[in-house]
Amino acid sequence: MIKTRRFAAVAAVVGVVLSALTVSTTASAAPQKSPEFTPKAIQWGECDNPRLVQAGAQCGFLEVPLDYAHPNGEKIKLAVSRVTHKSPDSEYQGPMLVNPGGPGGSGLIYAIFGDFVPDGGGDSYDWIGFDPRGVGSSQPSLSCIPDYDGYNRPFFVPITPGLERTWLQRSKNYAQACGANGGKLLEHMTTVDSANDMESIRKALGVKQINYYGFSYGTYLGQVYGTLFPERFRRVVFDGNVNPKRVWYDANIDQDIAFDRNIKIYFDWIAKYDSVYHLGTTGRQVEALFYQKQAELLRAPAGGVIGPDEWTDVFLQAAYYVYGWEDVANAFAGFVHDGDWETLQQLYGTPPFNDNGHAVYLAVSCTDTQWPKNWTKWRVDNWRTFAQAPFETWGNVWFNAPCVYWPASAERPVQVNGRRVASALLINETFDSATPYSGALEVRKLFPNSVLIEGVNGTTHSGSLSGVECTDSLIVNYLKTGALPARKSGNRSDVQCDPVPQPVPAGATADQRSATASGATARGELAVSIPR
Image (cartoon, rainbow, N blue to C red; front, top):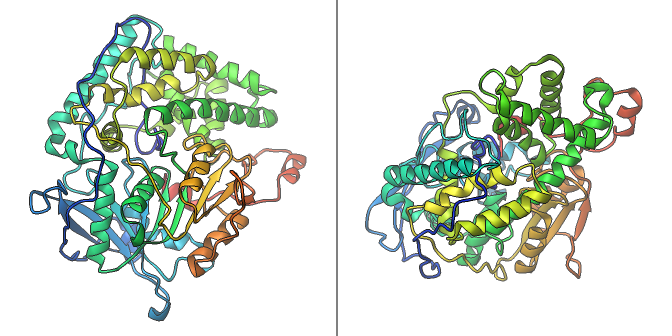
């Protein structure tokens, strides 16, 4: 899964018995650019979102083909937003499309993203947010079982054959519900479809080229667009780079190992501030306490709602990035010392739940490429992975397991080729768990006119424009002038910057504060207001 808990809670479990299970979907021909489609201009009007209204944004809908192979056929509508450039028209640099990731993340709010670029770096662009097909305010918007990721799920780890059977049936039910609710849309939800939608947005805006800022899965969407329409890309920023050669089954196993590494780093951080949290003086002690409480919650969910799955999901955000580390640690300490489960519930989320993010995630991931048809492979691969990385392996399996039963046919993955993209700025932290650093190196190879900034030893996913001066200044300079740092020889990053810094909790000693006083400050308002 390449998303945050805010897009959807993670789903859960499978196990040891059940014999080989197969899916009947078949891979179709390699994706191609669509036949020519000329969209109508977007009719801009007022926005519904108060934050967009406050920013002076305009909103509208763009009609695009359901199936680009039949451009004159049935249409769907994409929700689009715009905040126009603040600079003089003589300095205007065109539209900047933003995709926050997912797949399944709503991008409509990202029309305000230019306000978060320092030093006026975003002022000469029209910032364009959009909800990809099936997402949010776009029509139709996909939902299958709204509370699928709500409370009272079976334990993620399939420690009995019955748990595995339950999760497989649950996954099958979800896939069938998506088939019933999604209808024809499910056959047209690939990343290639969304890349064609981006090209339709470009045409509707009446420009020869677009600029693009993609986070997480949004980097893969950008890779595919740059492969199909390389001459249409102008300035390009990819933050948190998906490895196009690992989509999507292998990518999730890569994530499992990285999530486990990062949660250990987080437990070390909690132990460092034992004077604040009193949860253990070593990372191993904190980790042991985490699993002890998980086992207790399996026997008796706290408040009847926080079971072992919710417990893991609350901590998952700490493996994604450093934003929220203090919140999770405070909730951990409050539960251990005072039995406070309500704070955990607040972090997890309360009803009503919305599965749009999860539904679209699957609709894209399950059809971008063929997932393994044989359940035995899933079982063997993930028990092997679980042996070295128990934290998130089975939660990740069950988030993706509806792909085993997905009712739409799968495509062959795009052979990404960025050689004709004139320039791109790539950003990745060394220990990014959602999009491991090896993927950034692969994208750098495939985009030979790109430059890679490495946030050295950082654990934050897609954390650009968080106040790290080294990284932010390079982004600003690129957006203003198009200039990139020199590309170095070899399979490595071109520029090394500090990562988004780990926080120093309230209550830390003066010595601890002075030891970490230098460096950037985490994003603050942006992290809260525009989740990734």
